[in-house]
Image 1: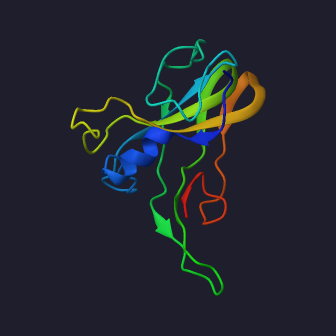
Image 2 (image 1 turned 135 degrees about the horizontal axis):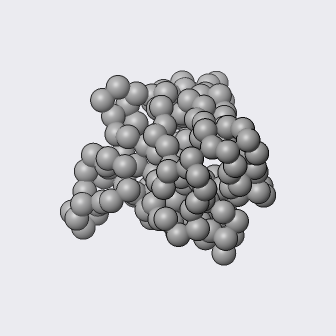
Length: 159
């Protein structure tokens, strides 16, 4: 299976269990790992995996920590039936001589609670990013710029 951009199904249930704390200060630590086009990542992804993760000098397995911008909500607009809860992350860079990646996985490296069976979770998945093909850096920094943190473009939106 290819990389498929999505919010992971397990994440949706874990939000209801209070597993993920997206507060900018005092919240969980979220990371982003980069993957080759051989990776199988999608809605079924439940946790970070090293399988088909980028391996190159200067890139550390497990990826990089993200800077969370905190949680916000939009008010219900006239004629709309609901508002939106959202969060995003600051731009992240991987200083490496050469990286080629087709996608990424955002995951929680410090979950706040246990899973539905009350067992501890290890690096639970949040969402998969599909870069639309291989993206490369050559003697340069590999940078991921997240969309603006608002109700219509933030990388994580619940409405």
